[in-house]
Image (cartoon, rainbow, N blue to C red; front, top):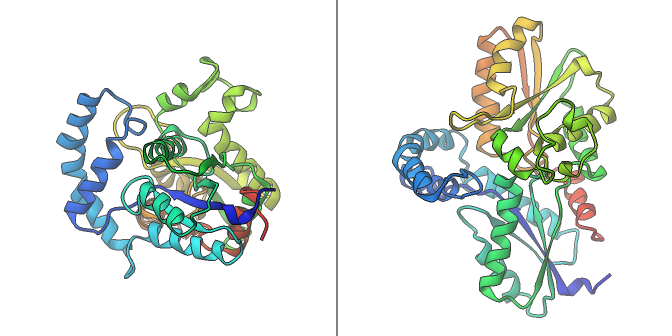
Length: 340
């Protein structure tokens, strides 16, 4: 192993607006949605769609949603990622920094800071905090980090940790975060962030495997980049570890944006259907996130709870992300191949 003193770690997450003001939320949405890997349409079409339609209408609503979860220290996502950084730093010798794909702290800020404080740095390990591969999350974060690294002509090399959707340490930590929240009568819903089906097709390296009958169960090189397959694998490994029978759990996909076809079933639709199917006690976990954020705290913790209860549900349990759970912090060490 290389000299640990010459390596560093950067935890990479999605990001948040700087405040809950409509101005800051609009700025954040513009940066996020103008990413060609998020809305993958030609530039002029994307510009008109984002800045002319989506952002002006979505920013006020998103600002209100952020306001319901904002903490005295700021955005939960950024605050929790910083807490993960501090917890990890206590266990490893390598310097640890954080960066956001959108908003602050930026990738450049993280590179500059880790180099300024560690002049002999030879390698930076990038840990994208996305368990599953998707062009709109993992891929864009990694490509952005590469671009900033090249533009800055930094003297250290970078290496990227691949998606860890099936890593035993991640599965164990995720299972641990779920176990204590379940009762014998609970139905467990795995709510993954949805993505457009066209993103699945674009990431299919074979060109003809994904989104066909039994495609996720049929071995293929496409699985290395298939978000849906990786979500299904995570679900299978966690439920096997916890011994949950197939009739006591299900999968749905949340946070759809726009009118195109996204992965289904939609979480909102399932919330409305499950009570009528006899599922009155529900626990919901969001394995696509390792840090609580708007999509978990507000969307799942508040809005989907209301949808489920209005549809006739009787008990709803929101399972927080792993956040600074000790087993998740030690899992990051294993995932990065480091020693504590």
